[in-house]
Amino acid sequence: MNKVLILEDMPESQEMLCQVVTTAFPGIQCICVADIASAQKLLQQEFTLALIDLSLPDGSGTLIIQQLAQNLPNCTVVVATIFDDDEHLFPALRAGAHGYLLKDETPELLIQQLQRITAGHPPLSPSVARRMLTHFRLIQETVKMDSTALTPRERQVLVQLAQGIGISSIAHDLSISRHTVGDHVKNIYRKLNISSRAEAALRAQNMGLLS
Image 1: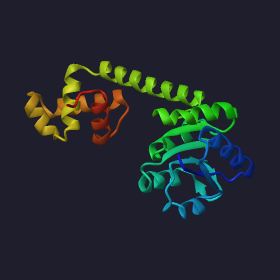
Image 2 (image 1 turned 90 degrees about the vertical axis):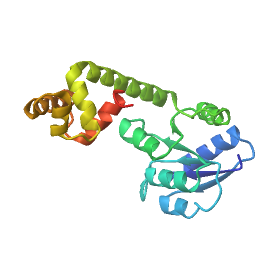
Image 3 (image 1 turned 90 degrees about the horizontal axis):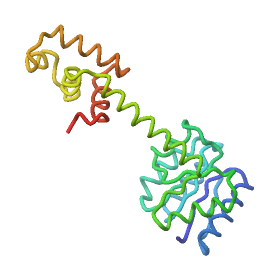
Image 4 (image 1 turned 180 degrees about the vertical axis):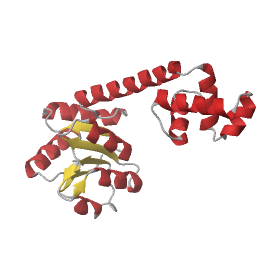
């Protein structure tokens, strides 16, 4: 590692994060900025690491996370924030963040988590890691419940819906009436709590019904 971008608007937090990073990676250079606009001016430089706060004077840090992912694909982007709720965590990960650290953790723990990068592991505060595990476990449980909630015929109809096949064609293929197909579709939407073919396709994919 040779240079880290720290996007943080609080001077004391900037200093703390810089100390943490230079302890974790001796010799690394800290470049600190306090807003998104200043960070955007640095995107032509090469950074191996970026620590990004999410609540900034000129917007959300997820914007610069997206731009870093696009412009510096080899840069490890880590959120450094006080927010540990789903509304901040998952948008940041979807934007391209490789890790998520809480600034109120002890410096020693932050150092340990950052050093995981060299071993190819994502730096995650323990409470964040637990939240992620719980989230994905609930998704798996929901998918399992969805699969068992549908009858075999409803699963057949769901697959064809997901493939973009029309109601008449589904009826012909399954040798049932269009009215019966419509009833199956209503039941599928109600049981899965969805309202469109796009959602049906996504749910069928998650349930493993599409090859």
